[in-house]
Length: 414
Image 1 (spheres, rainbow, N blue to C red):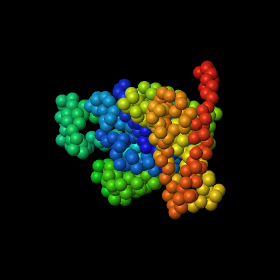
Image 2 (cartoon, one colour):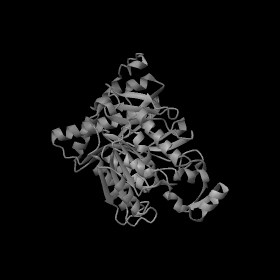
Image 3 (cartoon, helix red, strand yellow):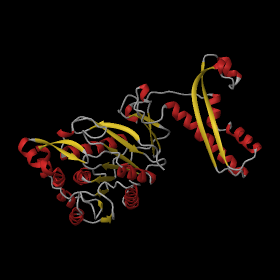
Image 4 (cartoon, rainbow, N blue to C red):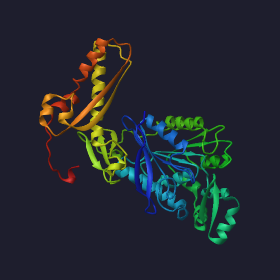
């Protein structure tokens, strides 16, 4: 199970802010992956979403982002080239390395696959590479420019129609593509490779998969995507590719190499990411979460707010406490849920608050739990379960208060 993708930003090759999504697993993170989308596509195409979701369900966090000038990213697409896409990927890997963990898995779709193959050798932590409908030569994409190629070369730039959208392509873009030697990079890859390709792909022919596979050294694998189209636009095809990747990569991850993992420290570690005004990375053991504020408060809305985390702690503790009680007493509850609402209210107006809180006056924090108990339970059992909810340790801490001790430490001790 995965959390909702988290919104992130980082600087790309041309200095523009690149929009990204990080799909984090709901549990322990086994490894991180980096996904490169197809030419003129975005990070949110079905194939990217399915693959990121499937990997997150297997404990692998996935960063997907829009290349410069595309999707939600800044910058001018017409000023980019294949080399800048490769540099964007290098920046993305650096961002993961600095803020989370370097990617062990690299995935590229179409021209993004050629870019991934080109950059893989410069990401030493990467252990496995996956291409989906990737060309064996970067300049293959020029075939999609139809009658505009001559004009671009003669006049320095021209407009091309791709998937119903118009893009300005410069002569330098063509020359950059023609200077790339993807197959040479594949021959020196030195990492496990999985090639996914559809035999009926009309955009990038199956011969490209053959060229990549022949150029690569073992370990290498090929999986046919049967009747899928180039973009894996059918959900079933995208989901199948996602399952294949998730199953294949497990044999190549290095989950025990502590040199490739951030330091695990006692307690909960919270550090600014440098993205946005408030965003912070919350680390606890092998788990990673983002903390942030809503956009209305100047944040990126990329994670729970501090009070959101506090509400989550109360809700999680309540559910766990009730489940422990039900199991111990043999109460058959199919599923337990708790919705937690938080607000600041005037103490005098809080009719259901304890008298000592009302006496404090002023504004107080009020948490309300809406508990659902699914199953065939009688009224007495339901009432008893609600009483047990009040025994949740976090509930007791909130009501009793706690001591918070603050000390300054030197940055070197982090």
